[in-house]
Amino acid sequence: MIVDLSQRITGDLRTYNGVPAPKISAFLTHEQSRARYQGQCELLFSEVHLVAGVGTYLDSPYHRQPGLPDHATLPLGGLADLGGLVIDVRARPSRAITPDLLKDAGRAKGGALLLYSGMDAHWETDRYWNDGPFLTAAAAEAVVSAGVALLGADFLNVDDTTDPKRPAHTTILRAGIPIVENLRDVQRLPAAGFRFHAPTVPLAGVASFPVRAYAVVA
Image (cartoon, rainbow, N blue to C red; front, top):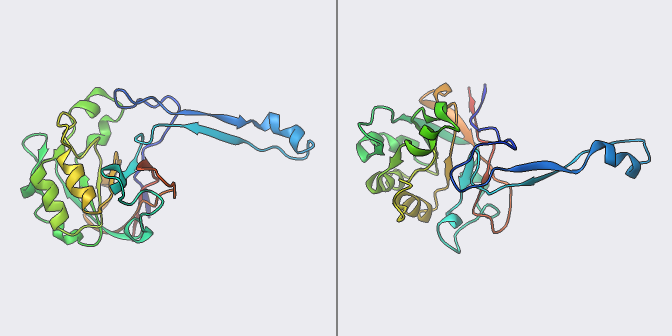
């Protein structure tokens, strides 16, 4: 079974405050293309303009620091066919995800650690943008210590957006661990025993960009 973990991107997508919505249009419509192909064929050429951090997207280490791998240089071995582990963080007493909630993260060593908060149920609402969980600096250190290859989350940001230091992004990305944010339907996965995939488009010089994240469950 394949479980799609990606949010759908549309031209009227509600985005985070200050980030413009994607613009999806046709560079060449079916109708316009008919003359080019002498009436024997018609093809649509799409045109998409977006700020990279919309939908379900992957932050490469380059997002945090120049010289680190971008979407074109991240090795596919760390993005696709990864053994996956889900940790349920819904029982936290506050928005903060603390190290004690990640005590089993070591089981995801070399694979993908996905954090399940259930926030995807509030996608495109004020609650999603304002009330989502985040990792404390110590929790980010715990992720790195666990030796995971990739971190995924079904919420807006692994950092507290009111903290300009962005300690979680700093610690995790500098350790070479890419981050996938805004996942959905993580509750459809078993706690373990699935393979996670989030390959990037090889865009040189791009730090963050949407991905089609999915899991294969045996």
